[in-house]
Image 1: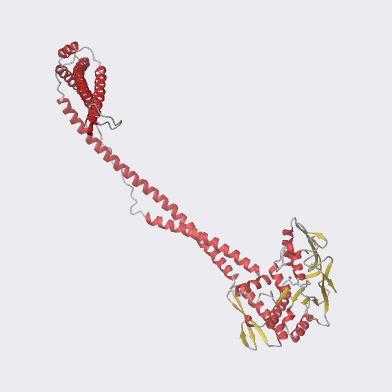
Image 2: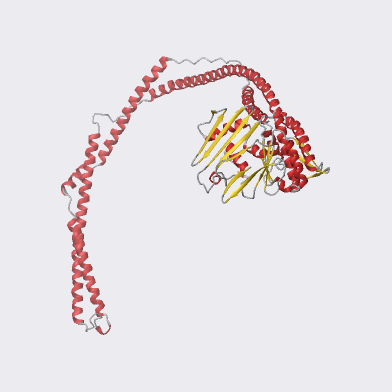
Length: 605
């Protein structure tokens, strides 16, 4: 049993300092006050001190009273079974959280870890806490309106059946791991089976090797000697042939004639002066021709008037100048022809000189290359060559037989080695196949057991069985409350289908969609379900909480509905309910008034 005892806070929302509520003082208490006074802030303050967050998602900066602007403080005394706890929360620039158990500080180094400890002590998470502690017309219990799957998940969390889900996850992971082991071993077995099939030996007989052929060492020695002798003769023949070729070339050169020509043309003549002279005469002729063309153009003008200065041209002068330039051109041509003749003679002399000099050099080089002591007669090596061919044929035949024998013996060696290796591998693989077969049998037995456990703890196994039994109890309790709240008009039925939990609402025996209910009708159904859930929790769980806030729920109920709600809540054991309202009050109920003066709120009992 979780008993929230005393809540104290300073400067939260619109409240000032020193606000205290004895949460367990009365079975049923009304929180009354005008809109905006801060009635609905109290359950949010309770959420903040226990979980460091609130169901409306209000930021920490907006929780502190802006008029005071000095952070906020919240403390709560509560007990869980026989242990007393006290939690202090102080937020300024950062948050400080202190947790005491029976007077001993059990806080963690960080506020985050301290809040984790608080949640472990309470035994329910923030979402579940908010739904069973706080209900209003806008954000009421989502259990009935949630999706089928989420509704079932809510019950799993609420009724602390999540250990079944944990077991299912554990066995599912084990199933996946063992399944992987089976796949791995199956893969090995398949590989071995394929190898044994592909390497099945049709014949395991080992082949015998053939003897190597024999060769006469004497014949081999004779062959090598004859080959050396023939190589020497061949080399000598090459030298004689080359020497004879040199002699023939030497005879083809008339050395006396070339020496006579070299004496006649002993030096190379420099042709550069002739080339420069030809260039000069050519430039001179071009100049004279240019002047001649110029005078020719002047004399051909109409009226013999100069186009540049406009004066009359002296024809006789021009004619005289043209004659002079023509004469100079002819003189240049004559001198140029003479230089050409001299250049041709010099070039011819140089050509004869170079040819004679080259032929003399070539004759001297050939003469030096001739071995005067070497005969010009070529020796006969036919007999030696024939004997070499006979012995070589015998050697080639031996080599062919030897290669054949070696190739055959290599094939035999490979075949015998392959058979030996495969026989050895077959024995190894057959032994491994046996071991793997035994291993796969054990793993499959283990896998079968895990699959049974996985199915047992799945949403369709023990979990479904537990929920189905608990849901029937919840259905009975809900209908008891609903019968009182609706005067027997409404009833509720839970239908468990695989991993879904469907809700069927009946209005005077006719099924109706929950979303089709009016606000007052939905408030009755929600309140009945909430009270039933809390009562069921008290019978099966240690996480029963004594506090319930009903925020403005009475606004959508008629007078009879309000009276019946009060009667039911007054009869509830271990429950301290706070009805939040701003208009309706019950004359017999204890009241706490939230008063707001200016910008500050405070409590008045």
